[in-house]
Image 1 (spheres, rainbow, N blue to C red):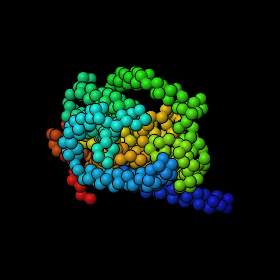
Image 2: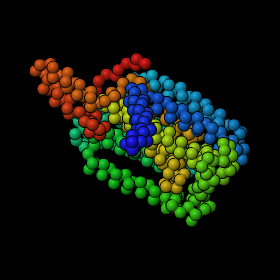
Image 3: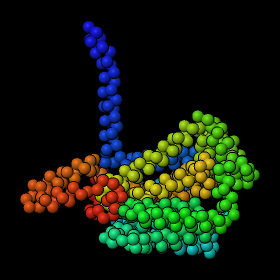
Image 4: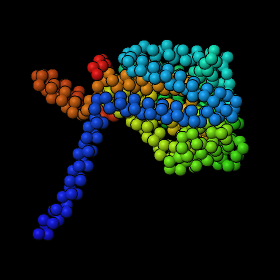
Length: 446
């Protein structure tokens, strides 16, 4: 009798466990669909863009009035940039990978010429000379340099795939070309963008299978050059040394950080409400660009801030998933590099707002005000969408390899070589490098 009672008590628990396992299996199956990466990219970017438009409107309307500008001027410009960016994203999602490889060198040359033009006739703001004024438009070519470097670097490494066993072919001309872009950007005073470009180069080399010793040398060189760049400008030295203790200079280098902390602290769990920010009334500099995450934390609270962070993590997951599953080396390199670009930019921005990193003047992708940042970022996401649509992702790469081995074993004398080839398929992006076989992209059938 006691055993029957125990069984009757345990049965609800067993049923609950079975239900949880069934739901987990359903969720796992959803993440194994061929178009999972595509939908994750679209959903995360559209939600971030929507949050960005709301917060730009909230942060800029009062700030514009305080500074004597039309109240709706910023949100109007941002909405136009968002529409153009979405059009570029849609157009980019329709292009095949070979089209991007064709555009790689023209994009690089155009970017370098634009950066040279900035140094000659560019406009300055807060000590940085990064902008070109073309009629009513203000363009920042260094933002487009990230996209150009991703395309050119990926195409270059794929073209040299059989020569990448030596350091000289790994580094030349990728690193010298990147150094030229970084030098032009640094001559304009934009160290934040230069750090992101360095991250893109490291990602390209890592994905291509560069050895660890090479990374050690490059990392030491990058740290040395960054230290030199900081020491060359006293404002950077003050910003770098005071970011951990902004209260030491509350009216100078610590002013922006202190007001960002106040905005985040006043938000609580659920925030003050959309449009209820106090820091947007002129207290927080660059409120709609570099510091917009502080306004998100103030108005939407910890829940809203974590939601934004979760959307960026979703975007990063989709990009890494594509890089891991694809068999096309160009798609792998571009997917990984774009993911690192957006993730590094997000971390630098959030690190500055939360006081973990020095303020580097880097906008939050898809959220901060500015078409020069929004347009290339949306174009890059459209490129990833194109890869997700045109490259069906195998549900089980190991199973696919095993299936090809079994099929080859039934073909007489060719079975041994085919089986050996299939068993050497690596499991990680870095192990595969760019020496994988490059099949033609499958046509879009959806």
